[in-house]
Image (cartoon, rainbow, N blue to C red):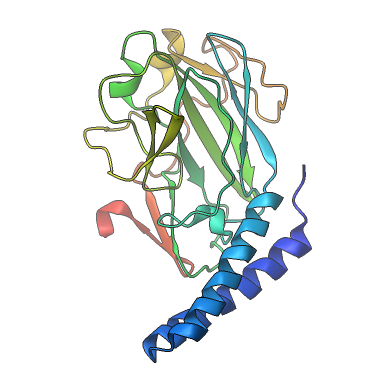
Length: 250
């Protein structure tokens, strides 16, 4: 499914206007008006999530199951990228999926948006604490987002006995539960990224997918791998209203 760009643009414009109207109604303590505009806003968000295209991000190294993810690949001004309140459609990952982190290199100034966006550093990275857990392997893939270049790292294997890394662009991570998996909002700690990927690829822990390959064919080894030794900032970006800072500057 591809995104209807015009419909997306209309939804974002109308939704952002409704959000402003809601804030204004709340400021003047008009609860009825705030409730009406908020309800319409939630409806637009649901419609926006329905438009998100399924993007190939991985294939399970254990089972071979292809993994796709509903991602806003048009631009970073979409509500998908709202760190605190992302508008997303629930994916259907296989049972051995653990989490999906990500990075993104901007190709120019980001489109202004009225929320905080945290797309990651400018080069892909892995989380050693997760990737060194028994039986865990990861898959690296490229995901273009408008003019920008994004990368996802999806982890698979037995669930480690500690909190996992936040899902790309959000402040929450997937948590196992009796009904399968759901979201836990507590931010995990102790997950320092490693941007030097060569040893992980060479050791077979990190597999990769060729850029543009929607079939998700897994590749191993450093020969021909396009993701090694990439230049770029190694501190995650924090974007709001088109202004880019790093996590260290917050």
